[in-house]
Image (cartoon, rainbow, N blue to C red):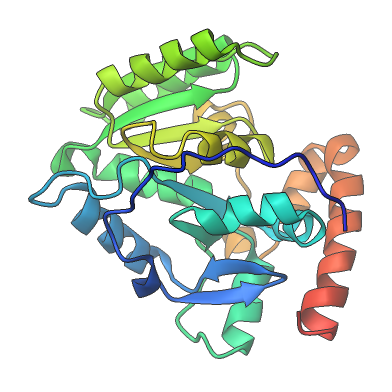
Length: 270
């Protein structure tokens, strides 16, 4: 196994909900939430807009796939990051397939982009406020335009494109202060894995909203890249559609991680 630098977490964070109420399936050491989209949307609605306020404030949600799960299996610190959040939802089809084979019959693929779309659709009705952290200024501008057009009444609390370099403590504190002043319910993080998960872990208990790492989700809703047709999504072939769009970037990742996942999770039963 490879051991990365330990990720600093906010030691004083106290979760307001009982994490044990979330059903999980351990796959390669990661406690993947054994849930479906309907369950997740109801859970978020109940806790984000509870009578006592946002009960998920300061916590984070990982959107897990084969790549992040295999990476976690090989990197103990990243595995801790995946497991220390509120939950790691099954973005990758193979994760929910393994979960069902292990007895979690209601478990189904719950993708980041689909979750974004579902929450955007009910934002006006439920009074959700969204903050977007990550990507480039150009993408954020396009994202703002597309969301305003496709989801009338959506409340975009704020957006910020961080520089492509490590932030100083002063800069980081200023960004957190700005995010918190906008009073978001959801803080969408688009930095790509594993950077976004590590960022969320380091800011657990500091950011006043539920952080959700969605990787390429910003690009989908900004119109930079297209999602696979629905039939490919339902048949767990979205990875192939993405590979066709970005072969140079994704071929090595998919070949490497998919092979390891099949060996460890499907054959060895890890």
